[in-house]
Length: 338
Image (cartoon, rainbow, N blue to C red; front, side, top):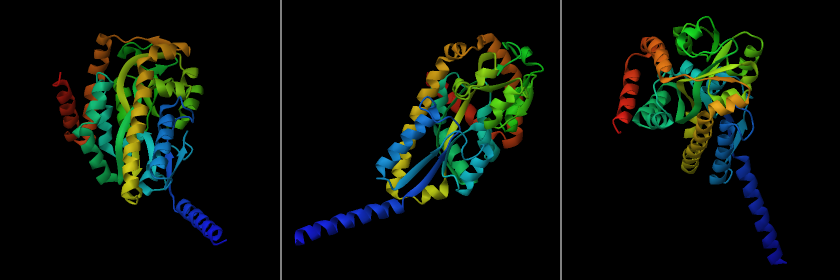
């Protein structure tokens, strides 16, 4: 009987320990804007992060994923990250630039040749220095970046193969002024529209077109209200993996290590899925019924010559020459390797 009593006591003690651990688990609200299915790079990456972190911490962190803008739009998520009401998010360039202006330097058009160059630059000292500066200015930790897709123009009016074709088009842009400058430098008019409202704006004809990578075009079914896509690849767009710094500093060393490791796994998954979709953009979008407009190197140079000086001038007026010069140096350092 004593043995049975000891066994029952031990079992009860273990149960109480498990219950206590569950009771003190840290809630990690993780927001993103893509749909909740495994074909969405953001969601596939988020699920991998959840499984990885909870496994490595034995459940001391409870990752709660909120896809498809469930916790709010761009501005709400950035505010939540600063206040700590949202602990983590994978969020795109425009909203980040509205809170941390130097991030807008990445909107310089026609800058990167391919994903290998873009990833290398963002993983270099340039990206690390930007993360440190963002943390100091905003209280938001940036672990790294993954692809938001190579951005291409779409519209429902006419094929766009060169800048003259942009004249008069009403184009949706992200909610940061640098994107207005980019589109207007090419002769179109720009209308900022938050991501959750974009499908409706296209359907109702509020705007004629927009610019996004193939992942977002497919994920949000934008192709249903857009006939033409021009594969000009004007900007390598990013999703940054961000966390409220107070929350991060409240983690144990074991939990911090788990988060640091697992977010890198998430970024790798996210980059791979998005890059694969970009590489097959013509096939994917034509199968969705869109007319794919190829853009030759000569035509792309026309876009570059018309847009890059205007965007650079705007960026310098907002943040100075330091970050644009650092980005130029990082790009050149990459080129010098080959």
